Length: 363
Ligand SMILES: Nc1ncnc2c1ncn2[C@@H]1O[C@H](COP(=O)(O)OP(=O)(O)OP(=O)(O)O)[C@@H](O)[C@H]1O
Ligand SMILES: [Mg+2]
Image (cartoon, rainbow, N blue to C red; front, side):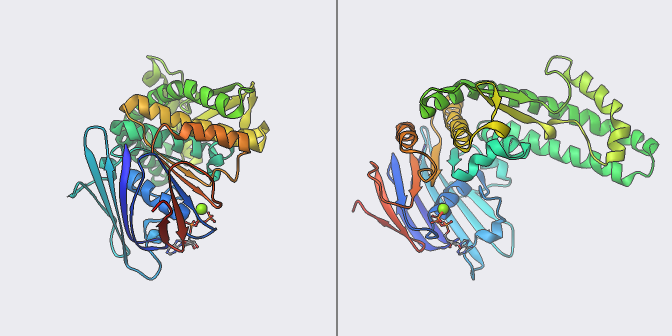
């Protein structure tokens, strides 16, 4: 999978951009606040349909403008894909794939796969379980559209179940209709929980290998999937989860929300038997987050038969020189976009980013 070219009009601080990329490594060098991250964000947006910065679509339009546009041309193993995103202050974004408008963002996800890493991705290890669920969701969705749709179905069912608690004045009133939501919730939860478990088993060997490689082989990484459904992942999952939902109904009604389900899932991450979230050093946490992302790269390759695009934002500022050198060995496997603030002798196409413009240094 390769991004061949990118055209941008009024996206973030880019007014007008037309750029062709190298098939292997593209390096973007620039001082702070010039547009390096914005450029990676535009590529990511064409792959996932939203920003990695949890920004609103309207905030991505260049200040003072009403519309913005990104057009990304890619080459895949078996077919080429052009993604066009149109952003507007007045209406919802629209996306075209090979000139055909798509109806749902789910139709975009999985077309051009991407893995993004920046120092902020440390939150994957350090912050709340939301981050780890988001990591699983984006990764699995890129290779499994059914997962993407089941996840949005689950979220709607959950919202409806919780709404019932708010709208009913007595527990008896809740009991009259809750069964419909419970049945639907359990079915969706089963699908998602088993997919997440499978995903963790799949990325684990890659993450262990990547962590060994980048850290110099001193630490043993372990990751386990912690299901929030409160029951074992076996053939009795649906029956047991239904029972538990019933058992918790009064408690959930008082709380006003559903206390079990895949929306409470998490990943437990350990280094040499110690929990990384609370006890790992900053460097260890960073390396674990990077290893998870590199594992994602390998898992997507295994699932899809080709590597996704790799976006590395500002990674050098955070890694020691040994780790940097080891990371760069990984980079050669797939088309990579790297940003940095200082010029480095990196092989590939080098660009300077200055005030929303890009100059190719190799010409
Ligand atoms: N919607 C927008 N319209 C115009 N400019 C924007 C918009 N959103 C952000 N910017 C500006 O874009 C500039 C470049 O941001 P970006 O994050 O890409 O910088 P960077 O080159 O990655 O810098 P750093 O090295 O500090 O990470 C910032 O000054 C920011 O204020
Ligand atoms: Mg930046």
